[in-house]
Length: 462
Image (cartoon, rainbow, N blue to C red):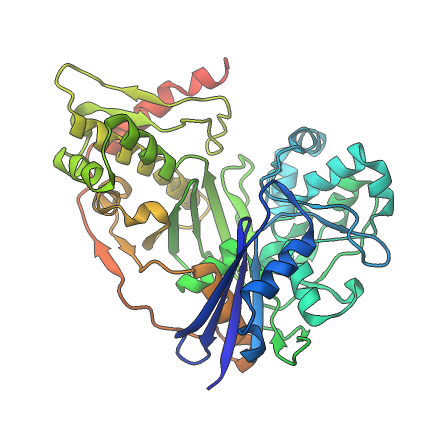
């Protein structure tokens, strides 16, 4: 029996799945934690991978790493790490993002790289390094992403032979999904000079061999890994409801959104992965559950007891500011309260408001040419019965809820199997237990849009 290993090196931990190559059956798994914070010594990821993969990796015939995107791993001419890696959630480079965008304009950045710069992207972190740590910047000879560094370590090769993949490269701010090439001018604009960059490998390429002889696939960014693990194809969109919300789907055409709502990433198969991220998702439900003093089951029962439209209540769920749309200083707004409002209406409004913010993401994707033919609901909040049943009435389409799984690690395993077999397309492992939910669109969209648009002028005065 042939086995492959899929690695998910996320912000908080490393997960390893050992998977049967032909069927996708999970044979074994391991997990290890990462240090907390917004910067991390890359060696900590390697130690976590060895711990999580103990007794697993050496049994694999092929391995691939899916990693947190955008992180900056700076190396010197000898390949040594210059400073702890800055992670995607480190926002200290926000001023550099604003400056670089102002220098060229959002339209030019979107046309060149598929992105409008934000503090999460690697290019802005390099600009911060050049401005604030000139000695470290002077030492820096190469830059790579977290999954690139781990793939290099698995292969035991020098940094001059490092590889990346197109999905993770598309989150740097100096690579073009449209042309499939690095945009060196953007790198120089950010950092002040050129740096050595990993070679961008083909999606199913064997980039080398591990120290125990397994085939090593290129790896991928975490969102592209999740898409691969879910088996998303063109026209499929996933709505991931964790602490934040992420809407992403597979498209045949690259996105180019100067508004910055849609990030124009590439996927792990040779296609494209437009993505919208909101700051507020599952924590909206947590907040209102606490306000109502109920547990998860009681909250779901309340929300489902109210009619669509929540008796006229509408929630704008920007509780701690919002990224999409860009209202960083916003707060939540509850509209339509009357003496007839009930606790059930309040619970329903919370669910509808949270889902409506994701529906804005679906609309932004459609404007970029990806009209969802299938919507999959994943993430922690997808376990809520109220969320599952109310989602179709907000999105206006049926939704599918696949079983809970480590889809990023599963996607990495699928890429490893693809590279190992040399097939033309990734394996189509069957996933049982998917549930389908249907519903009729209610008055939610109009209520939410009215509140969102009425409050748009408030953001200008904050």
